[in-house]
Each structure stands twice: as C-alpha cells, then as structure tokens.
Amino acid sequence: MGITYPAENEKLLHRIAQNGAVISEFKVHEPPEAHNFPIRNRIISGMSLGTVIVEATKRSGSLITARLALEQGREVFAVPGSVKSFKSMGTHQLIKEGAKLVENVQDIIEELNIDSLSGSNLQHDKKDALGSFEEQMVLDALNAYPVHIDELVRKLSLDAGKLSSILLQLEMKGLITQTPGKFFARCEE
Image (cartoon, rainbow, N blue to C red):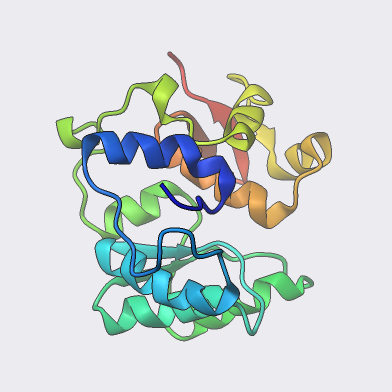
C-alpha cells in the first residue's frame, strides 16, 4: 500500500483492506498535501450521513468539508466552543448559518433518526473499537464517576478541540457517556 495519513490509521487501513476495498483518486505513493484535502474530504462527506465539525477557525479546511456536505445533501453538525477561542469561530459561524448544534451524541442520533447504535451492522467489539492511542489515553483517564472536560484537558495536556473530538468518538462507540455540564464517564461494562 502507499502512504497512510495520518500514520496512526495504518492498522485501520489494513483492516479495511482485508474486509473491503481501499480506494483513492490519488497515486499510491503521493504524499499528503494540503491542497488535496478538500478533494479527499468531498468523498468522505459524500459517504457519510452527516459531518460533525468540532473545531474550526474562520478559514479552516473543515468549513470546506461542511460546504461540500451541504452541497451533497448531508447534515452538518457543529460543536460549539469558547467564545474567546479563535478555534471556535468557524463552528459558531456554521451554527449561525443553520448547522445543527451538537452537545452530545444523542443530538446526532436524534437528528439522523437512528433508532439505536446497538444494531447488528453497528455493533463493535469494544476492544477493536478504539481507533488510536489518544482514544485509549482518554478512556484510561475516565471511570464511572463523571469528570469535567476542563479537568481532562489539564490532566491529559490535550487541546480542548482535539479532546472534544476524541470524546465524541468514544461516545458514539458507546464507551463513554456525557452528562449535563460537559462531564464524562466510562460506561458500565
């Protein structure tokens, strides 16, 4: 295979190749270049029911992906951030323009009218569901007692936007739950 970007998706790439097909509009060994991301993201948004933008500056490539999703008739979701952060300006603009505000995974499930994430086609072995070292690190920092997102930012030294993205992924996988006030806890086994 060619170049995997980001590199931490190497195992996922091989798992997909074993069970399906890996396709690209680019040459096998073409390096990841910023001007190619919108082309790639056009395919990703087109294959998805919706696109969730977690963090975006005013000129973020994520906003290009959101526009592409809208053009393809897909739902666009945005996670609000601090009004003091320049990294939240793009998501706030999307919300002003009609993107669905997302506070937790339930907002997405309800908007897309998904009955349950426990359906057979969405069932995951929880061990295999973890996609990255960072997901495992965040999961290890949680237990049954809810922890505020700010405490996780300090404890893990992760950017708040990146952490929000990881938390959303873990919540969608059914590994953690969010309670009001941006508190997160591991799901009971």
